[in-house]
Length: 144
Length: 144
Image (cartoon, rainbow over all chains, first blue to last red; front, side):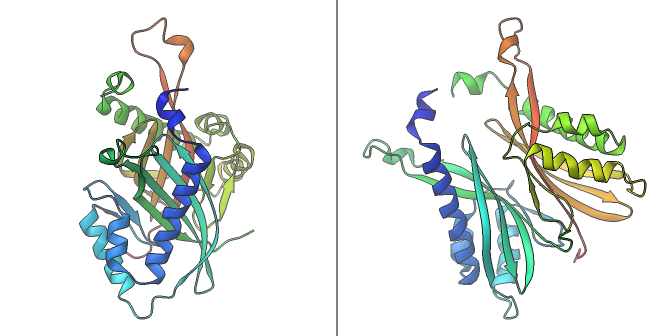
């Protein structure tokens, strides 16, 4: 096991990823456009697929889609159903289930670990932030 | 840059991930159930979301869903449209576009690098295999 792997307990990582995932749904339900922007990695290669939509690429364009969704007064809230997180290196993957206006939704959320290197000298545990690099939501219409 | 990062050129990794992704679609169109099984990491935590379906977890259950799809005589082939790969550490992410029976589909495919450690003593370049750990497909019904 490498020093890098020893630094983190994997259950801590999973917990941190699930916390980031909850913050995502909290930002959605609070219609908090700024919080949503900050949950995503800034960059041109992040990707987002909304239910029944095509791929949107890049932080600016993705944020435009969230702005449209979160400022839509008819947009129902998300009721959180179930989730599980896997962490492989600096990537956290959540395959989650939600319910929106009675329709079950499945979501793939991918997070990347960002370590604040400036803080590692001052603390035993480096502060990790998990930022969204991909979201894919789709409705479940067939449950058999 | 760590020794591990130096070992691989990132464009080589992206190419290898896209090659694995093409093998996935080839197995689909060839209705090759065994090839599909081998493209996936064996394990209980791999996940798969077919269009309009819920999450299926674990290699055995996922393989059952592929068997049903690939043995269905009415299942149309996938026409491949566009794809881009990102590689972060040992994870490759493809957000791809396909067309199935005229319907555009977006897919999230996540691959994990598996290095054959037994071969690294015998070759300059370790043989990496990229195995699927997550697939999520959904139809694009709104293109505006």
